[in-house]
Image (tube, rainbow, N blue to C red; front, side, top):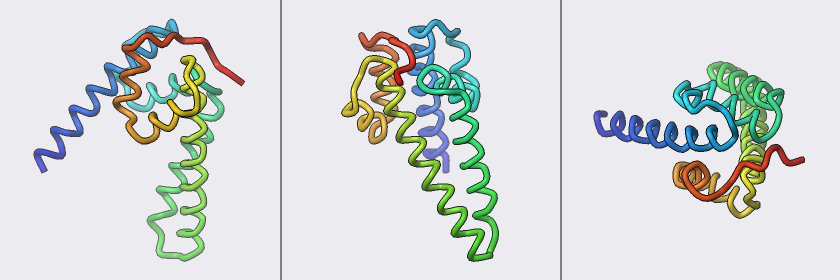
Length: 133
């Protein structure tokens, strides 16, 4: 139990450090990285569209809500919403990589080794190039 909490806090601190670097490179105040949901909102704003953050957020919220029901239809809808949320998350990482001048391979790294690749983006030599269509 304690080890899980310690690892979680360490991952949160690494995430703050990485996002702080990402935000300052893009001209946003670094303190926005400290607030959990708001930092994700800012990352969507820097890499895609704010409206897509709300779509993603509602998908995941509705999926979590529906997963608590014993009804088979609710569970299936929850599963479909979860899959849609994961797909949007993948597209988000591709957009985030492109916003910092990286390609699809880097987006795969963001998916598989997120903290490390966020640190590379935030603290490395990459520069913010803006939202890419």
